[in-house]
Image (cartoon, rainbow, N blue to C red; front, side, top):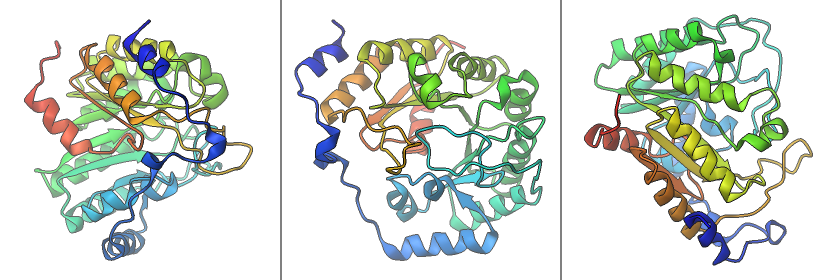
Length: 309
């Protein structure tokens, strides 16, 4: 029995039908900061994944003047059963002025670290890689001191597209594997598990300074499957991993129900287990999301960067 399995055996599961446990209470932040950020985004015609994906940490991040920008529109060409973002067909539409607006927002918010992500754009030949690269370059030109993380879709696992992003020079290349291999067909029907591992391995091979991935628990996985997924990520030379509780975004049938709620103690056990595999940093907790404490993760990685290149 692994350490994570031992932790589960010692902790009775929380029945999702009884409602969310107390450790999933979301802190309400200052309305003023939230209003200011929302107004700025509206003025510049920008989207954040904080709003579109209904992130539970939205106000905490906005209170500290940080945000994860969502580029390439707010309609995804895929329909994953854990995600709140709307599905649509953008038909090749690209706003090439968006990178400049993102850079202005970063400057006006005084950000020290910015995360740029996107919907999946299967309608574009490069999956949107060119817009990611342009955004990184515009932010770097506007504010060289600001560190930049890109959270990319799989880009069809195309080497040329991933190279376009990596060559633009982000400090972190992030691609979330989201769940264990067995559940991919159910919750990510058009996103292959092996494709995600290929994206991460290519990002490292092509010179990515720091690579990162994340997964959710509470979708019906076993602890052994989580351990296996973490080992796969480490084999792909991922530096940073995030592990958080899946929270069903709506009660709609298209969104998979929560299978169970993990306790804070179980997340700590998962964190310790993952650190034992050699990750530079592991962020694990009930409300952890991919961009949560992203700047702190990068700073720690830079301080203890002992992973072989």
